[in-house]
Image (cartoon, rainbow, N blue to C red; front, side, top):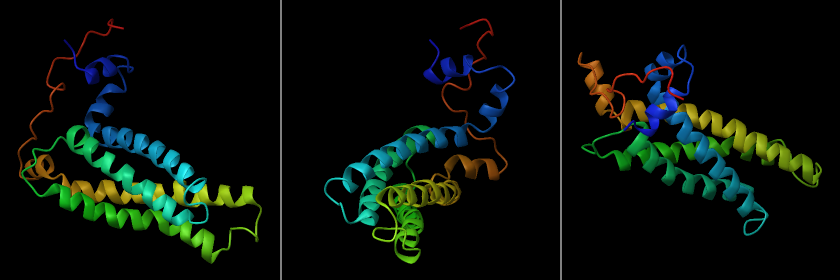
Length: 184
């Protein structure tokens, strides 16, 4: 029985499959990241419009911390598939703490340095500025930093084997022969 990944790959056009397989770690990381981005957005808005009404930086920080825990579990178990021999949880959360700081800096600059907040702008302009600076710019910069740092310091077992001249062990589901093209 094919794995969910094999079933998904069977639906991808044949000419794109080699690129997806070659960059599968990045693709998985981006899928985990997009799910955590959605989670962060929902939590941020919930907190900002209920409990932390006048504290947007705190709301984004709390939402990002919660999404970071979810991200760790998904990245460890699926995107990077590590064996747990290194103290990766500690390293992951250290890298993520730096990334959370990177994530909230654009929001703090937008709010407090550029004064894109009430009473200087309308409530709608404030929310748009908050979303663009905190969720879009901050998340994008933090995502680039995290991917680089995760591969370099946290989830290094497969990358280390590749750099030592050995090919990494194939991930489950990828070593199986390619499915016929006529499978839906």
